[in-house]
Length: 544
Ligand code: CFM
Image (cartoon, rainbow, N blue to C red):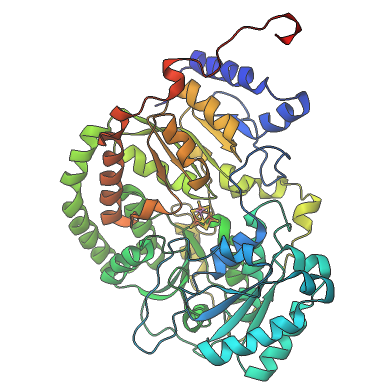
């Protein structure tokens, strides 16, 4: 719900007050990462993003290695993803981030494996490249992957192991792609840098390396930035296939080398998570002429809008009709059940703080079950994810960003195609978000707060001011929040639930959120500070 001008001013004052606890320089820094939405202003304050976290502040961010190996590469199931580094980097990335994958009999599925070079002190002193080379040989022989990735962790860059040379030699030896990623944890300011590094190499080495020239089905699409957490992309694909789309590849949820290499054959690229994959989306457009469409399959209305926008792009009356039929059928199956959950959730408020796109995507779904998002933010997104791509020309590249290579692709003379005629493009481009993302702020009501790289101190202080009924969060803050007596829903891993995408996913989400509110647990918890102060005593002279 939008706040009045007066209430917005009160909110700003409360914010200033708790920020006063910071040293002056820190306050100034953190203040620039927090925006109170106020559409009456001629110019809304810009938000600082994608800059270094202040040392000493407890952030929820990860590192470049997490973004490269963990986020973008990890879900590709038929490649062996090697982590070159000490075992701890693998131990904490063991398993998946609930990116599910399945294969038919006989296909390679390595999603359950973790491959680490287990770098020891002697490797750091004398170099770990020989050990790495031996490891690649062993993995290729044992697991028969379609391709191999080698992700560097911090010490690799510090000692200068040449993983590129190891990869090149292994590739010549085994005849399969072996790719190296210089995604040392310290590159960039967060996992966002790792997304970019992974995008670059996938584009240079995998995408477009297949032989197929024409997609095998009509309405061929790729789904970019969808990682199949809790089975999300399976649910999206179920609906898309029903309408008649041919899904060439998903990047990278339940993805494979085999499908990615022919991704150039699609007629349209959908972009779900803009932050992690906009680089590939842009390069595909540049190289093959394939436009990208920003979609959001989280929430019933967003899903409907995305499906209609896709139909508008293809402009085929039969497809439009089928789209409407499927929407009507799916909607009928969930609508009345959603209403029941809404009765319990209605009027409540939420914080929606996730990594780089869900902080925006889930606000609509919360709203559909009656919950207003009073604070939202991202751990590591850039200004365009907050304010829209129109701010990109104004973003000043700092040294940290310049450190990440920007690769340039050029037109593939053989495969580049005009996918949509200029006149038709002009007709539809204002109706659907083609090659455009508007960011989160435009969808947020006045008085709501947008925070970049929210930290633990601010989380607690914002909770005191805004008194939300539920928080969408991650594993690092979840238990602190629950100990304050507030339900917390992990929107990274979905707390072992999901899928939450599409129509059926929205219903599952509504059910889980309602369960959060109605759990009897909260009756048994009284945080200690609610009964008495934690510290009792008086100060006497001489410290006695
Ligand atoms: Fe994109 Fe993601 Fe996200 Fe992300 Fe992530 Fe994730 Fe996320 Mo956790 S790719 S930015 S780096 S939607 S792992 S599936 S949930 S922080 S909001």
